[in-house]
Image (tube, rainbow, N blue to C red; front, side):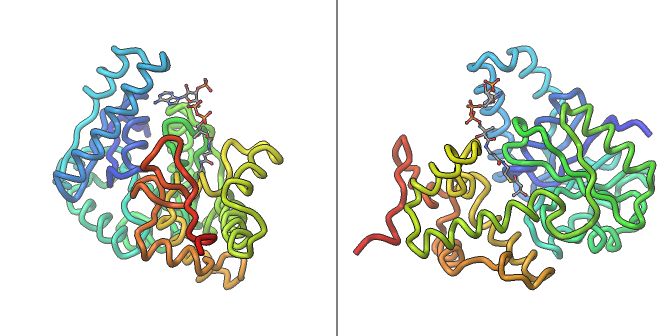
Length: 296
Ligand code: 3HC
């Protein structure tokens, strides 16, 4: 089966990035949001990313125009009826994802493939809530989607091997490097990344080092492109908190348990870049580290 038309459920940070790379790679792409406001914000993010790419000389102006011309936004599930592949990137919450798939399936053609961009929920649990678990895979992108090369492809014990191969080919066509993972919470990358990130928060709570020093330590000492707190602010402290909770529920191991500070930051709305405040404060450039632990 050839994937031509792509649908994306959700036009947040991940959904907008996925819709952008699909359209940029030549696929007619329709992205769905629950409200016009969220849709407009997501489409604006795509426009800005492409404009930024043009300013950097990475995207040709005509490529930007062609990408936008292949991209449509909608709040109506029926607009996705003729998609060959629909990638779900809604909030990291099982009932919300299951409901989105069920609404989608009311109009979707039977042979279409369903994929979830979940980073921690069970692909099997989502797939069995649909009428096509054999045509269901995990397709996990990384943030920022247009710049990160990796995609994790997850099959379940029910996934048709031909579906997995079709999606693998599709991911390569987006210019990504796919790796295969089994349906285990966190797949490969988050299984290793999440305990590391949570340990960085624990080190901060214990006063081992400051936000800036821990970030510098991992950047310059291990060659990471960004330190754990800069990364947390990019991915979203709320998102990482949900992922950690799901992983803790699955494995019952302390290394996946979100530290108390993280919970309080989520409650207080310190979600990272997207709320202007996280481990750093983004009101000024360069962002300033937050001193909430050392303030007397
Ligand atoms: N359009 C096109 N290209 C662009 C661009 C744009 N809008 N913006 C930047 N670029 C290009 C740049 O020109 C540059 O290209 P070059 O390497 O050829 O010179 C490249 O992208 C890198 O951009 P910058 O130089 O501006 O920025 P950095 O070098 O700091 O890289 C980064 C930015 C790629 C985000 C890098 O910091 C990084 O890799 N960070 C780690 C991100 C990460 O770990 N993500 C995974 C998070 S976990 C996750 O998502 C899983 C989830 O489940 C939680």
